[in-house]
Image (tube, rainbow, N blue to C red):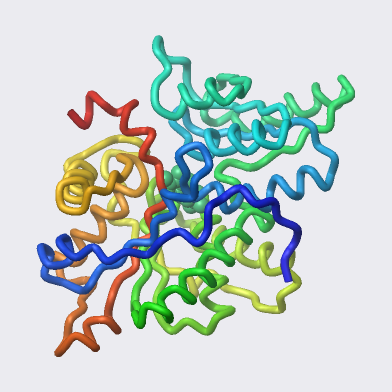
Length: 334
Ligand SMILES: *Cc1c(COP(=O)(O)O)cnc(C)c1O
């Protein structure tokens, strides 16, 4: 069971082997799940969440979508596209100040017709609520989507994505021991982990933290469990998860969110030059760089003897998209 859904994505996204990079790293066989190819305005992982969020918004007779993010938010770009397609207004609250020339996702937000509001990063949520309240007084019905679309409604998209991937892997005769995904607002990892638990998957869903350290009082794993449980509730499932069922790697925060370092540059370069695939410098590049590093250090091993066991110990890397932000990082990447 799940709540209603509006089709926005081109599914299933392909799973492909990364033959050359796998050989180069000399570790496990690596497969890639192409969620950068979901199809909506250059694609990415937020499209799967938006299929459920948009359906919920329309069910509530909303006429405006309001969401927030960083200036190069892929989530905001995909939300702007979903709103455009559905004929809704879209207001995007971005943390920071406007650049002289908009590029990357910000340029696309404008092309997609979103109304853009700037505030400082810490005030994005209160700004969204202020705008929503103002709109209600004007007779509108706003629908506020949290940063990253990560709540029980949105994360349903990744429960379905997990089911989709398990079906494809079975058909391909591949059994991966580890799935690796960039993790930030949490809906993607929470949905995948819940989908994996529902399916009885015996492997590991490893989130690479993009921007959160191991905080004491409010650990990220607690947030992930809360999103997963809200999702299970929306879906009418009795499955529940606890914080200790999530695995998150915190060792690759680099210079902080959106700061491009040699890890990200190396991952983007390897994936582009070996496989013809474009990663992004903020999320998928950091996560794939982490995977390359962990394989290099023997933290993720594969192989064993023979092709069969190699397949059993494979890795599935979720490419969550983000390529459009490369253009806004031209200085750092060139
Ligand atoms: C938002 C985003 C992520 C992180 O997904 P969450 O559900 O927010 O954890 C990863 N990669 C890209 C490209 C993204 O835009």
